[in-house]
Length: 196
Image 1 (cartoon, rainbow, N blue to C red):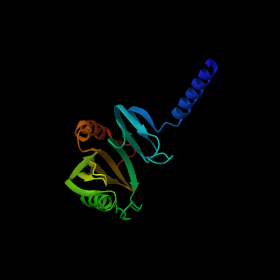
Image 2: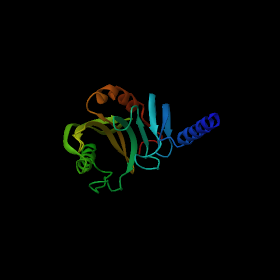
Image 3: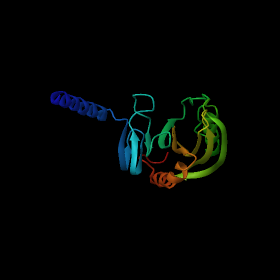
Image 4: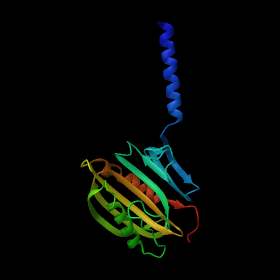
């Protein structure tokens, strides 16, 4: 009996080590530099970085963070090529567009998502990110299960890229609780390259 219990403990310990090596999230805080995406931000204490895109074994684009789980709140800092088809509308960005029009293209793509219902835009306004002219969107929607989400998104065009800084959370409790954290992260955002 004792030998069997030790064998079970060894098996359990090995399983824990194996799963830890494949961890989908790692604790991240302090300055995070994403050389390939050409930006850096300061991540607050207690937040975790997603090491895999949801539902895949692939690394996510850019930086994806959460404190309590992606369904409850998430911060994303990514860049999208201007010539890439957007997921739902298949539209592309035009580098000559003013920020307000870039924001409208973003909204249209989100509205076209079949899992988005009752989208309500609260704000579409000019904003500055790292000294660059951009936009600020605030909107809410419901999932097919009636779960209400709220998103604040900043974005700007830089050369052949659209940079997006997004905070999304459950509209109740989580959104207000972590909004100041997102604002600090957004203020810390810096491009590694010089303005185009």
